[in-house]
Image 1: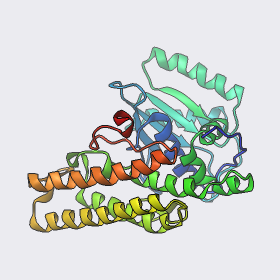
Image 2: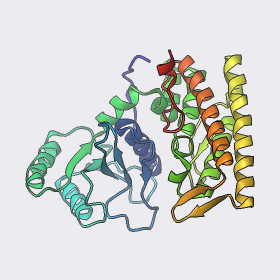
Image 3: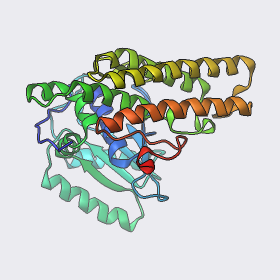
Length: 320
């Protein structure tokens, strides 16, 4: 896709801004496991999002983000600009929290790029570097617009109405980018030993099937984070057949996993899922790989990026 140059307004709700920032984090740092930290009402020590910078192989470091500005009502994104006091207060809270070992602390804001704020941050970083403290950065709204305009997944997830008004909309791409996001989760990218809870895996399958059938993608709290037409609206019959086969595969996968739990061969051990039946483990991985490879075939045919996984073997690119 050729990068667009659309003017994009910030989300109206602070929850939407947090969710958008999480998706931007995943794209920018290459970490599909990045997540929101805590929930409303919990002490978060200046951290809204945490994850890993995976842009440099074998040199992964922790990065955390604080989202600003937010309305006092807890709904609207604040219109006020951040200032030096905001920056120093947020950095101070971060430094006293449990994520102060991170390599980078980013303040994400709907404010546009401001040289005065950039100078303040750079001055901070000089002294922080001397004391081996995390580097501070700011994601201005200019950064968001540039990144979103270059990634179909983000554009269609949050700004498909603007694409419609600019004659840039493609129903196929809208639907497929929702599925691309649905499959970009640990349930399809990590070994079972890396799953935190067996119920997380089942919920991931349920949410992915919901996205396939309805076009609605939910977060862990059951909130709709993005929506699109269902796969049955695709204008390519071959793609529809392939995705229907993926739906059947996931239903079979869910059935086998649930059966394994009832028999005790799939169980929780500390903070990981253990599959003690090797034949079942092979079966579960086979079906996860099969589902992901089929989805990737469709994504590649549509000119979209495929979903990467540590369990799916060679990528489609490596076979050509």
